[in-house]
Amino acid sequence: MNVDGKNIRPIWFNEEKEMVQVIDQRQLPHKFVIEDLTDLKKTIYAIQDMFVRGAPLIGATGAWGVYVIIKNLKEKSENNEILINDCEELKNSRPTAVNLTWAVEKVLKAILKKETFIERLETAKQEAIIITEFEANNCSLIGDFGVELIDEISKKKNAETVNILTHCNAGWLACVEWGTATAPMYKAFDKGIDIHVWVDETRPLNQGARLTAWELSKHGIKNSVITDNAGGHLMQHGLVDIVIVGTDRTTYTGDVANKIGTYLKALAAKDNNIPFYVALPSSTFDWEKRDGIKEIPIELRDPDEIKYVTGKHDGKIKSVLITPEDSNAGNYAFDVTPARLVTGFITERGICNANEDAVLKLFPEHKY
Ligand code: MRU
Image 1 (cartoon, rainbow, N blue to C red):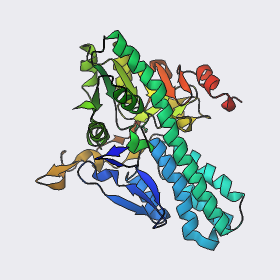
Image 2 (tube, rainbow, N blue to C red; image 1 turned 45 degrees about the vertical axis):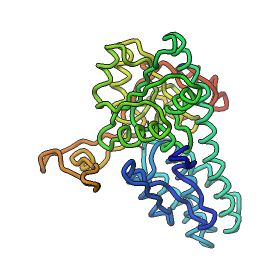
Image 3 (cartoon, helix red, strand yellow; image 1 turned 180 degrees about the vertical axis):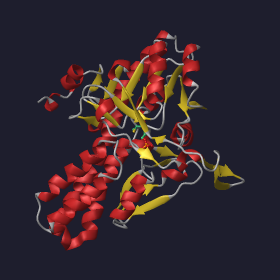
Image 4 (tube, helix red, strand yellow; image 1 turned 135 degrees about the vertical axis):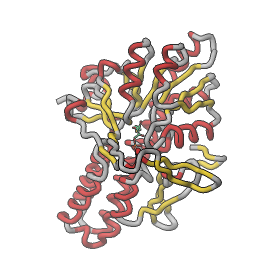
């Protein structure tokens, strides 16, 4: 997407250096730093420490990660046991986003049909390109379907500003291009619809305040960062027309795992009769799990992410302690919003209700 006149993605293959490169999102919006993914260790660290993040991007990184594995194993990549073990390690680098397993397995399956190192390396590269473009294209389609919802509200409001609330960052930084939740916003803005976005700051790592606000502002979209607890109040006062969020994993029955705090937004939206939509590509559906609350693994992260806040002060990036030194912290990274609270899914194949029948009607190839 467009950053100061340059077209940029959060991951790409540098043909000249023959290297996978990513934006280090931990440093945004204060610094724009590019990192090379040189080996498996670095790729896993980039996923775990969140240089790259967001379900579709984690998937694309996983796909490129298989290329990185093969490149480093060289002729040893013809040894399937080592290759499969490395891919297993890569798949386990973060637990909640289902795209990671999906992408790694897809690339690995294609590679195992090839025999030589050269064939395997080339296949991994081609498969990673296919997955990256698949995610970019799906996000664009999500935007095309989602913009209709915003257009409808705008017409009902006689072209007055449409206020959209979003949580975390389900923007192009999380998804290669367009984003999932943000795609309808970008397409609405590009169509000339007057929109304003309430951006939940998204504690503890502030993906909303740091990344979504940055992305939207770079595109010229009006936005205001709010505290994570402000949404309910805004909804009670008629200041939110629609909620659109992304997801890290959604069961085919309609339960949605997304950044911690999403569930509370869905409850508040239900109580105030505000449509609550989840935007996702097919790669984020879990086609095996039925009960999101019981079955989706929820990542528990380092308590220090809660105890310390990082920001810019006097031109330098600083981290400060905000709790008593010896306080415990429980860093649950995601929660599950039950299907009954979700108005609908915006996917690359259209918009559907959040239930098994509707989802499988759009994606019949996943019916057993
Ligand atoms: O922990 P993160 O930053 O990888 O969390 C992922 C997210 O950004 C969100 O949960 C997002 O809304 C869904 S991914 C498009």
